[in-house]
Amino acid sequence: GNPIIWWGNLGFLALFLCLYGAVSVREQRGGAKMSPIMQTTLETCLWLFLGWALHYIPFWAMGRVLYFHHYFPAQLYASMITAVVLDFLIQVSFERIFGPNVNSVWQHSVIALLLRSYVGGKLMFILTSN
Image (cartoon, helix red, strand yellow):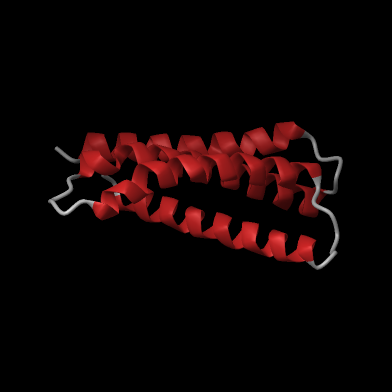
């Protein structure tokens, strides 16, 4: 497993829990209502978090050695949470920078640039690691 992916996913899990907790407290105190984008994001992440917890928590009770393959299903859910939260952060930051009528082409361009950087880094690592 790549430590950057594992620790990054753990960070985004924590970010989701903080975001969910803050929104829950704000709603219970009668604060402003959530935007539809935030509501969809939190509902999606809540289901993915439930899947992560159902795959991760049972291994805490095991009294034997656990190998990486025990955690891979939970890691898949954590990666999906990372993708959803990262997409939400990109959408919100673009709306704040360029206004609410921002074109989705710019958002897709940023995502494509990030993906290209990732794939390019992987290819450079593979080509130069020999």
